[in-house]
Image (cartoon, rainbow, N blue to C red; front, side, top):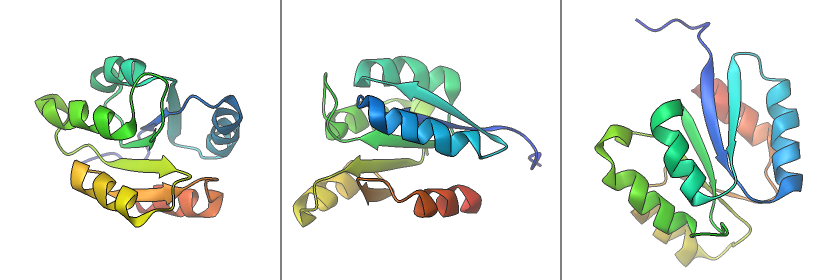
Length: 125
């Protein structure tokens, strides 16, 4: 049985400093949650097995790879099976959403991030 008071972890994979600061402020007000930041796909791949987050919020346009490539690495790693991942992008095209879902993302959120939607999703977890 899990302890409801245990700290949960979110890995936010994002290279835009403004978005990072916003997310840090959101999580500052979320007791029971710890935010970890990776600014590249490579950093995320190094951090994931150590952090084993409850949720990964992943920008689709990173400096070293795109979100689909990063998700391919995540899904190929048996240690990360079942990891909940949400794609974040300003791209509103349906084909991009479909590719993200096919790659294994559980959801696709448009930027700028809807803070209310984020808080509701964390509460459901």
